[in-house]
Length: 295
Image (cartoon, rainbow, N blue to C red; front, side, top):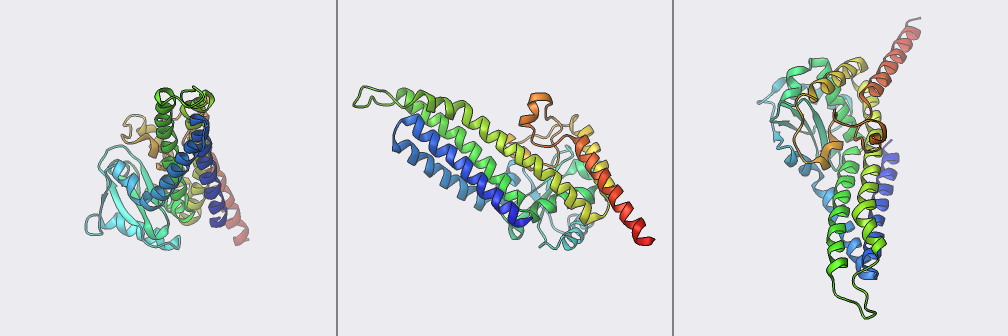
């Protein structure tokens, strides 16, 4: 699993970095634009790797807590972390009544799990354990790094597009009396590149949510508790939306406002009913396995 996610991370970095470099070249019509895109890709990649355990926490104003602050929650996370064979992550609470949770960090040794005040009020102990196990699986699979890289590079593509578009439209006239770069490059950076980056980021996020749900079921041995938690989170989340930077929506366990139809291309999460259906199937498999073992 880890090796596969390493390959996916490298492919994502390469694809989004390529969009930055190619878009920069086409927008300016020369190697200078490609070089600018390469610089942005390098800075964004390093920044997302090094600061990935801080950016999402800051975006949602997550506050670190110790065992003295919330002993039951802390012990639950410590127990699940041990089952998942992971180092104890930093534990944080987000001061909002919106029920949600997320994990962040570039690797298991620099990771954090954050839960909102709201999620602790609406979920029972087993449901909350399922949610935390889901987030621990993200850490174990290095999904948190991939999500941070994708979000940062996607933002860099949008920013570079605006910057180079300004230069292409209002920059100095070249020796052959052309002002700026290729209009197609401007179109790529302004419209197509950000859309492509978003689709790539969200498609990978949806795939990894299913994987994290399976991992949570393995850690807790109670997939139906997570299924129940997801249903509650979707129902209540629509009434109390989560405020924060939209770039970090893929790290949340639930985004109840994702669309349908063609809008599913831009969904940050799978349909809740699909996730529940998978968890119910896992529960049946576990029950069948137990029955066979007893016989």
